[in-house]
Length: 283
Image 1: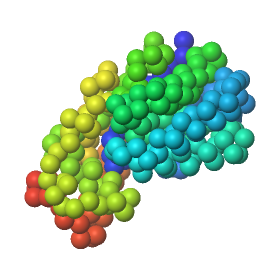
Image 2: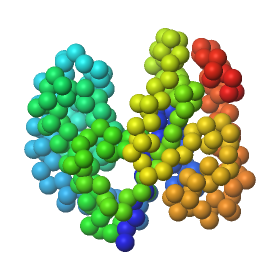
Image 3: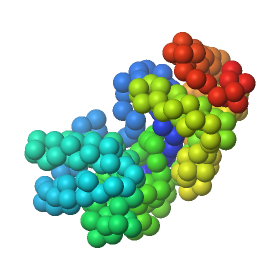
């Protein structure tokens, strides 16, 4: 029986680092955010499940374009997705992986259209739900394992009509009031999108723990990175059935997690970022 494992992390919480360590045993941060027992080249198999992708993409593009100027939260992200989806369409709808991963996570920016434009939201939601369902179906039908790390639980922003594989196990990073502020500050600093200091004086932990509430297990961001807790780091490797590798290399692994976290703090401090007192107290 094939196996599905998904780990969810907040923006700024080190997803590429986690993938390189927990999925790829430290080989490279350039590796994909997923690992499968299927073939390296997935595109030929995706073509078999995305039979009407060109027609469906053209339809959703027109709906997205018509709602671009709706004055609700998420305009910038919706514009980004529109341009990337249009490129996907103009290039012949071949790069399915870009739709499945990067673009699916952006569907939350369209959720704000649900009240002012419910019919448009339904079309957009159905498109992305269909893409995600096809992605899962490909692995189920071929009996391939899929271990992945991504931002959101798939049910966080789309309806329960999503066909989650019945044997999928999920885990999510959980932030507290202080570490939530820290990861948001770190993410905005790295992206060059820092807000006014007042934006980081209040925690958004309830919003940023949405995937944690939907997941089978949670892992503490504070314990993994600030405390460098061996048992909490070990849980990440256990989740991905990589415990043997952890036990054989745990000294180096724990050191790598510590050094990664220390480097992030050094980056924050070197950039003259205004760090809230409650966050600075953790350093």
